[in-house]
Amino acid sequence: MKLIDIIRDANSNLLRSKARTILTIIAIFIGALTLTVTNGIGSGVSKYIDQQLGNLGAEDVIVVQPQADDSFGSGPQKYEEAETGTSSNSGFGLLIPMMNDQDIQEITAVSGVVSAEPMLTPAPDYIVGPNNEKYQMLAQPFISGTNLELASGVLPDNESGENQLTLPFDHTPVIGFSSPEEAVGKTVAIGITTAAGEQKEVEATVVGVQEKSLVDLGGANTNDALTRNLAAVQSEGKPASAPEGYLAVIARVDVDTSSDEMERIKSDLRDRGYEAQTFQDTIGIFKQVVGAIIAVLNFFAVIALVAASFGIVNTLLMAVQERTKEIGLMKAMGLGRGKIFLLFSIEAILLGFWGSLLGSLAGIGIGLAANQYASSTFLKDLPGFSLTSFSPISVAVIMLIIMLIAFIAGTLPARRASRKHPIEALRYE
Image (cartoon, rainbow, N blue to C red; front, side, top):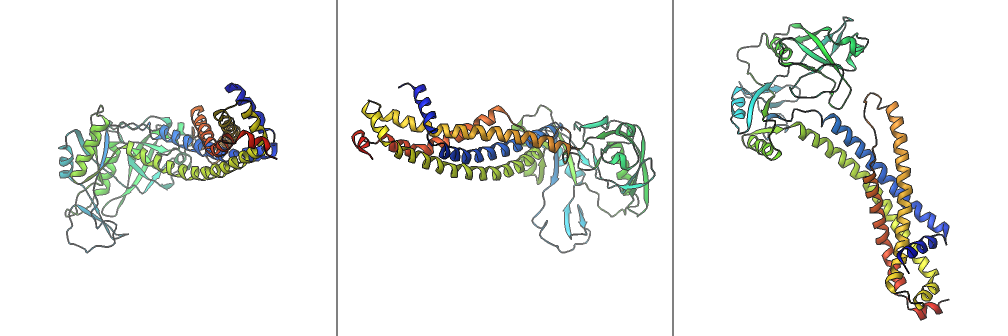
């Protein structure tokens, strides 16, 4: 008997007890559906993260911060007079390590670091647009080489002496612009409080409007000129005894630095007492979180498949019992143990195939419908974000895994069928 004949017979054998076969396939269907949907969600989210964070650029940038000592985050510490190099967080009673020019020199001395500059972090109070109303705002310095997805305009120019910023997409209608295009080129006022408690305003030009994305963070991006001017205003009236410091330092390496060399540089910085992180490290954290969520969902899918595997065992054991005389006849006609085993194994594989095929197709259908719903509702403000994404390879892998599980589940009944003694089988009533 040829292999194609065995496959044909195995497929027709499944139709002998339609109800039992359908119920077994439904159990496999549920597991396949769950696996397909959860992996589709994981693929869709990962693809969007790659688009949004993977295109950030600035691959030559390392954000360097001081390592927190053991007392950081462990509760209030004893107050020390004239603590230099630290700033007090009065809300929590913690000491946050700060960095100074000596740290910049230390970082620059690390082999492979081309340059280092302080990351100034002024804290604006409000922004004023065409409607002359004050609205709270967040801001972060724009890092050269970073790619932000823009709805209109261009990125801030750190080489320019003009105060420039990009606005988050949802800021433009609130502060008085009818569209992102209208905002580009217009002047806004940014309010900031000096160290002496006086509130002042700094004017800046809107050069771009950011699309909503994972890297939006709800804040404006300011170029170097605006960042320095805001920091200067914020420092006005600061006592001479107040410590100077920065929360972080931006270190740059050669753009052609290999991944191994980058790890070596980060290791050297850690050895000197600093925390070092690239944008790619941030991407990795996002992906780890997504991967952990998908792994939990897949766990439930695997449970469904394990339950389905018992259904396969039960279905085939009953088939062996019902077809005992038939097995004896096949053996009497010269069909060997190997082909008997293969016949029942293929029946198990076919159960896995039909269940996984139907489950995968249903999962893809649900995923595509979910994409349409999500893009018109809760994801409408995130263009390019598909909730699910399916690739032929991933679907094929899911089907192969399920068919393998089905094969393993079918080995016990197949082995029992192959070991039937032909004479005893023919006498079976």
